[in-house]
Image (spheres, rainbow, N blue to C red):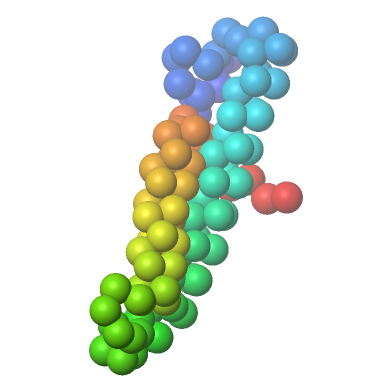
Length: 94
């Protein structure tokens, strides 16, 4: 009997195709982990961003720029991780 938890496209894969699928999903899991780490760093940087925007002169706002970069990285890694990890129905733990 076929495993009904798998999508119909994944039920008849060769061992090499399964290996490539597992690599793709593990890379997606890695990107999701990096996404959550960037979210944590961005949340911590947001504590100092207001002070940086208030007291830094002119266009010199390094903390605000780093906060924007880490937030953008979190979004990029999150989207890439969800796309690469699509189709997985189990939690992957290392």
